[in-house]
Each structure stands twice: as C-alpha cells, then as structure tokens.
Amino acid sequence: MTKFVDTIYAEAVKNALMKWNNRLTKEEAIKKTENLGSVEEAEKEVVYGSVDAAIKGLANVLGLEQEEEQEVIELLTKNVKEQDKINDDLKERIKTLIEEKGIYKIILATLSNIHDEWVKKNGNKFCARDKNYQFVPLALLPFSEVESDLLFLKPILNALSFEINEKDLEREFGYYRNFYMQRKYIFNMEFLYNFIKSGSIVYDALKNVTTNRGKEGGKKELIDDILENEPDVARRMVVQIVEEAKIFGNIDDYSKTL
Image 1 (cartoon, rainbow, N blue to C red):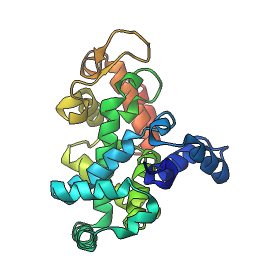
Image 2 (cartoon, one colour):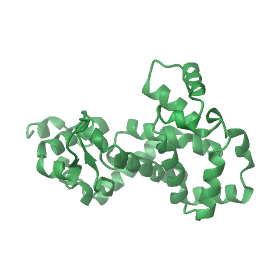
Image 3 (cartoon, one colour):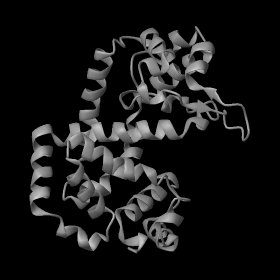
C-alpha cells in the first residue's frame, strides 16, 4: 500500500492543517501529516472526501471518458514520485481540454463540485453555528471560502503540472459571481433573500439535505423546510453573505427589516 505521506492527500491535509490552525507552522503541519501514517487515519484530520470530489469533479468538468477518469484517479492516488509516469497521450488531452475551456473556468467549475459535495454531506452544521451562509452556491460565497476549497484541488493540478495564480483566480471569481447573479436575477438583497428562501428549487445540492441543528440525536429537519418556514434564518443568511462576500451596498438598510 502506498504510504499516505507520499500522496496528494497528504499535501491537501498539510495545507488544510496550516489554513485551519494559524499557529501551525509548515514544519509542524508536515510532521503531523507524517504521523497520520495512512489514508484511513487521515480521515480523522481532514474532509478526505473533498480530495476525491476534486478528482472526480475535475474529470467530469473536462468531460473525460470513464476509462480516462479511472486512469487519472489511479495515478493521483499513487506515490507522488510515480506521477510523472502519467500517460503522455492522456496528459496532452487534459492540457488541451484545459486550454480550450480556460484554466480558471475549469477550476471554478470543479470548486463548485467540491462545495456542493460538502453541502450534501454536512447538513448537520446548518443552524448549528453562525455560518449558514456556507449553504449557498459557490458564486455567493466570499473568496476566502473558495480558497478553502482550493486546498483540495491545488495538489491535483500541481501533480498535473498546472500552476494557479490566486490573484487571477480571485479576479475570475468576480466575473463568475456577477454572471451567476445576473443569470439568477439576484439584483438586490430582496432578490437574494427570495433566492435563498427557495432552497433546493434554485440550489439542487440542498435537495433532501437534513440537519439536526448540531444536536446529537436531535430531530432531523429538511433544510428546505427551515428556509421556507423560518424567514429569520434566510434573512440572517442574506446579512452574512452581503457582509462576508462584500456584495451589494449598505447592509444597514436591510438589517432594519430583521
């Protein structure tokens, strides 16, 4: 079995540990990652499934055939020292597809896939902490959240010899958000409120997602039902999104309606 420390998962864990714990140095993160020892143990330290979602999401965005997707998955989960043995034809195909579609469009589409998977698997965090704004499409998140999802995609792109300029990505994310909001008719805070309140009707990742509001053994409720029946939840999410993502104007006027 390939040692966990020699895989892209280890790189993702190391980056995540440094991101989530500002006091952890790079050397400390590397040491902690080495001590994890295997993929199974690593699941306790980081949302391991996010790396898999990134690999599969990237393959899906690129439109790879199932056989090609499997080849990429097998390669990326091997020892990093073996990753230069990637099939030249496949690597050229991936490079061509990325160039045709645009690297940042592909990155954002893949990050959207990662985020959607997180939403589906973390319903119990809804109404359990003051971060309900995370349960919206990627385009409505602050860029800091996008950077968090990037932790899981970056090692994959690096393994495929692609570099990411995060300033360029942030600029492209701004275009991505503006286009999304225009397409969804989100022109002001009231439109945003109605969008959020619509739940899975407008954001498919929320479909059938339940929450116990962070209470172990608590009653399971559909997030859709909470958004529909508890308007203050959606209103609070609007305030959070406007404040965190820096969209629209003065939040004070809207806050008066809370």
